[in-house]
Amino acid sequence: MKKVISILTIVFFLFSCNNGKKEVSDKKSGLEKQEVAANYKTIEVEIEGMTCEIGCAKTIESKLSKTQGVTYSKVNFEGKVGYFTFDENKINQEDIAKKIAGIGGGALYKATKITEIEEIK
Image (cartoon, rainbow, N blue to C red; front, top):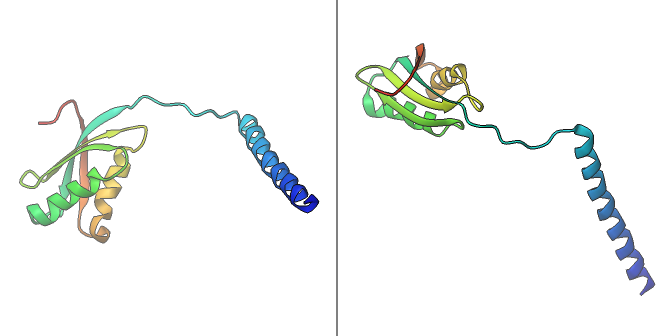
């Protein structure tokens, strides 16, 4: 019985020490979790390399819509342009251009011109 109580005391002591260390390390860093207001931007991106609407335009649209920070994704095959709304706190224009260029192994598509727009056409 004494062994069981001793083991439980040691286990309790170890867990209580770990919790205390976490609190101290959080206080030492001085960092607190804060929510930052979203900063949405909409851009128009001219895209080279698209050869079809379903295989190319829809693939780019789908991949970008799944990217963290991108809230709207629409690619117009005929106009060879994509419209993307994103939170600038999570992703930037250059990252979106790199994401487009990286689709399909990086040899298919290229974002050639990026223009910030006020509203989607």
